[in-house]
Amino acid sequence: MKSVRSPSQAGKEQILQNSGVSGRTGLLLGVWAATVVVIGGVLMSYHQPFLTPDARILSLGAPSQRGRWRALHILSGSCGCSRRVMEHLLKRRSMPGLAEEILVIEGTESSLQGTGALLDKLESAGFTISHLGANEIPESTGLHGVPVLIYATPENKLAYLGGYGKAGDEDVRLYQEVRRGQPPSALPVLGCAIGSRVRGKADPVGWKYR
Image (cartoon, rainbow, N blue to C red; front, side):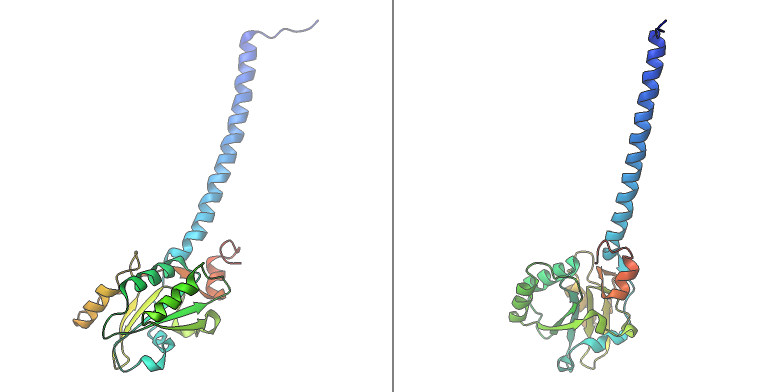
């Protein structure tokens, strides 16, 4: 004889089925959220503060620029934060009485589209452009990330070493304070990791750098 389920029994079974579906959905959503958090953390690690480099980083600048006030902009063609600084420099042009050099750190990553043309415009605007391989940088300089801003006196003494600010455009204010004899506090270096050694620590599974 075939059993007949009562309406109440059928309702309970439907509730249990729905609960099972909701549980699985919740689990999947939880896994997805955790994945997003982990990946986001890794990607954001390239735009978080890096340790300020050692004063020996000044040696990376071109010797021909010494003997006058100079700025050394250490940037990377593959870094969005560096790109923002490049665009800012082109907009403001070189400052009078200041020799400005842009040192482009070359790694294994491809440069952002249009970087070459942007550097050509900067050179035409009076900025000295030089290039250096990321793996050629002495570890003693303590350079872990870019962009980095350096101001040096005519006597080749460090006057400022740090970042450009969150928007990448506080270099003029910093220079004015330096020239007034009011050394500003160093801003954090906010940007991208450079070199295989640093990238390996920041991105051990190769999500950002391959």
